[in-house]
Image (cartoon, rainbow, N blue to C red; front, side):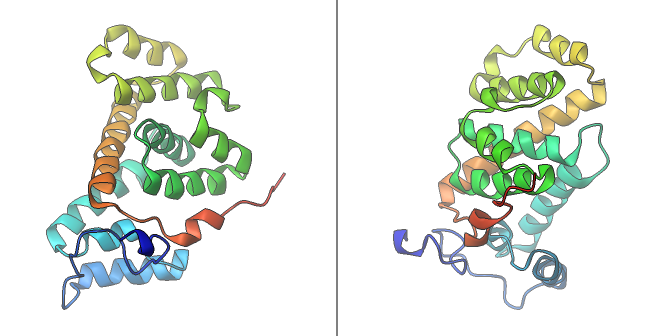
Length: 198
């Protein structure tokens, strides 16, 4: 499958074709993506062989990344990038790196988070959040009350803590699915929000 890395038709290395006929809920989502993004993210194509799995993934993603939260959409995308950097997940670094560039209007922030979040110009509160997400990903057995206390001291609520943990956990799962299936990022992600908007 190495020759299909830039082919958006090949969402992953597993030969699991889209459900046929395509269930209405999936077709509606695909239409919305095409209208809003100009493409169907390959992660959605990868799950579209099974309506139940597609629905479960989509519902969890939408709840964690788009629903109301004390964390901004940008902060949730920042967590996705830091987790994906620890896991060397090409798909998620590419897709969520693009999202950070778009939401922040700062391509430097997006690239810095991809390479080394500690060098990124973020607030002290965001740095505490990213430190926690990094540790929870790299050394989960070492998380202790002091780590949660550091988030509280930075100004996060108990609900915020749950959201940080849940987003971190979700992307650890997603990274492993992407790695195990050799999920291919859409080519368009590489080019999004690259021009300096400052």
